[in-house]
Length: 414
Image 1: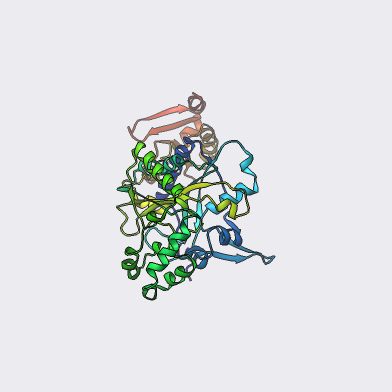
Image 2: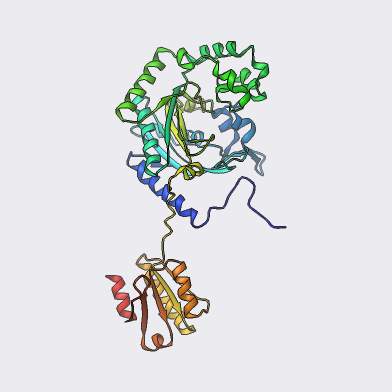
């Protein structure tokens, strides 16, 4: 039986891998320009981290996590998202003792057992950022602007920024009661998940994507009408700063995100070229999460970008496969020894080099060099071995010269 990759995973091979490299290179440069520093957290964590941080009533914790027990019987989980992991690292390493707010970014795989869709996998990859320790609404605006400008920089098409406020522990309970009262007469007509949300966390009903629930959600009261004065002021200032940053946005009163830890600002960036599942970036403020995980009372805000969806939304994905600088063709056993020596010198100077060790005719070797996009070929035959020469051919112009081996190495030095 043929063994294939598990369902929901994919192999990323040439030339697509160079699109991934391009995105990662731009991400490193872009986030570092805002003084963010990379963080790398474990791929698996203790189960309790996500039960407490993400919320036991969320779809992620209830249905989508890959949970396993190690040999000691302790329960672990492949990380379904990285915000909780970053906050755990913040607490564990006492990062609050360092000066200033903490600005970090990450790139890596996440794991959720969910329905397969275009651009959605069970092992998927995210680029994300977190700011810990700064509650000013200008930070919210800068975070949104940073995400928007990154997606624009890599040429994601038809970007739309949507935002809302999901309130805080002071005003959200009032809204939850109003929402339950408004939906109480039609809760029996909702999907099973929403019936459970009605009891556990009615706000998350607004995040339902089931068509049968949509008409009832549209009649629900708007959370923006129930915000406390502090949340109203925060939201108004975020909008004001976004306007000053010239970031186009719209207000979506049903935008609540799918995780329990969000407070105040919530936002998404969508691509109009992706169809119905069009969210590329999502994030928000989570001012109580670190305290919930047993750490100090430190606020936070962040976002995550799905790399698979981002690649689908890019106008012209950059698959710039690097060509080979030197393709060496040895024509006999003695030439192979010289090829090894020359290839070592070439690589020491940071050029890309490949040696064709398998015997081949000159015609087929040159044909392969063209397919590999080689810039120059070095042919080493009996004459070259005898006279200590290299036959170097420019694959673009067709010009070929014979050059002494030592002189070739000296030219590399220069």
